[in-house]
Length: 296
Image 1: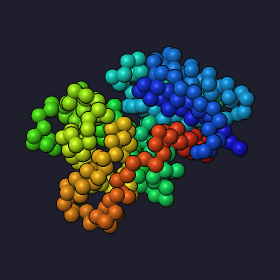
Image 2 (image 1 turned 30 degrees about the vertical axis):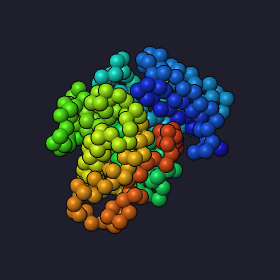
Image 3 (image 1 turned 180 degrees about the vertical axis):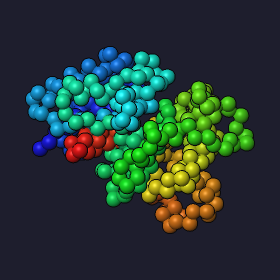
Image 4 (image 1 turned 120 degrees about the vertical axis):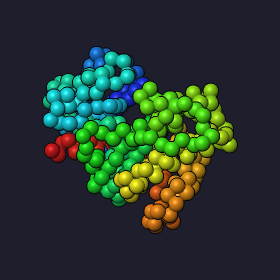
């Protein structure tokens, strides 16, 4: 049986595991995200330890972004310039591949989660899926024909511009675009707007009307531009399960009958859904990356 190394490089923590299949995690370790000088050697040490015992077939890495995905670029496999201290232009793939000498699959963390959901979760049996993570930041993984959407870099759907709700006087919280989707609807924006974290707001708070409308606009834009077979909404903010029926209702209202597809008009409860894999989506998506890298 093949063993794979999977790595999730998150904004606050790193997760490394040795995995044989979606229900067969052999070893796992977690440590705080600090600096590349500290974290990359930690990842390598974990993988080398287990590779020496039983050789790994390949490695899959789902990374926080932005990252460089153009394989023709000398910076492929690096973190792109970022506001996260110490990580701008830091190489991720090259030192890990050099140390292990086996294939490495690499993609954005939310795209990786989308692959996990497609393979073993909410997207089983589909070919076209969009996964939004709505938490500390907002991002989207776009899967077309079973693979990440091929494009210049990777989608930055969290920074799409939206129509402001007339009664919304909040300036926004994005350091680049002020009132983009992330600036209006991510967890830090909710806390800055209302003075408390999202999980401390009651379900009947007006905050959720704003939140549902802005997310619904993003979902509508996604339907119109990408036409996926299903949209998955994950991340910490979406732990507020009462948001789902609100978002679905607002999506239908904003589409206003323009998209007359049965999957949306008659079955929207099955079209806009939570992740089936929960917090395992990233790890299992990294397994997909590793398995695909081994086949190249």
